[in-house]
Length: 243
Ligand SMILES: [Zn+2]
Image 1: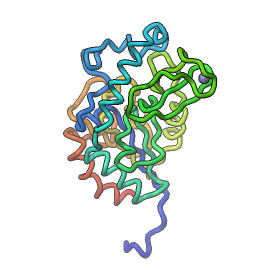
Image 2: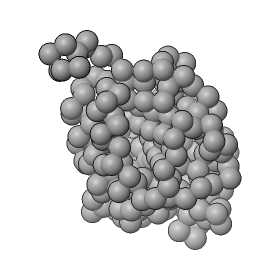
Image 3: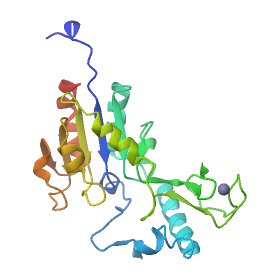
Image 4: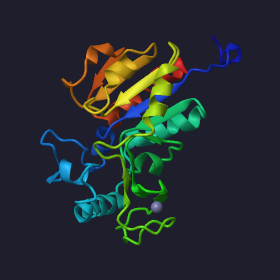
């Protein structure tokens, strides 16, 4: 069929990414097999029940993460996602479990950060969230209520509600057979992408460095193992056909 006769499509492309997407940019993945993140126990710096007690350790840790992210550059996987979004405006939705800003630095917009944003702070009392960019937090307190000890990094900690999960579930509920979902760089340990996208009517494509055991990977319509920076650009032809 020539382009002239093509019926305007409303097919959606959903990108669901995990920390593996940024690993090739030199930012370590959130969850290693050791349960440590850069040798700091996750339970000390990512736990909503204890973060106030560990206030100084929490801020020191995220200050270091933020500064480490300041000169991190998006890789080819981030760049191709941004290109797809530019090409099909309003039909590409980007969801990420990552808390780094690399998708935005590649030119992506309206990214849903399911687990928060490491470059913002959050006051747990008045719920204000504000950007501080890639610098150490000066501990000046909440701009609205003025409290100091109620300010934490705007990253969703273990035991803390993740408000954007609602957005994720709405998108998954509305998936149709004409839609394509690319699940990239996620082990499925925190969010079960096999049950979310693999069980949906959409054409679901898993892109991971290697096969894993946390998900039923046979649930996805297609699986590609290898670096996302290589595989995502190769999927462009397939996406063109489906969009
Ligand atoms: Zn406040």
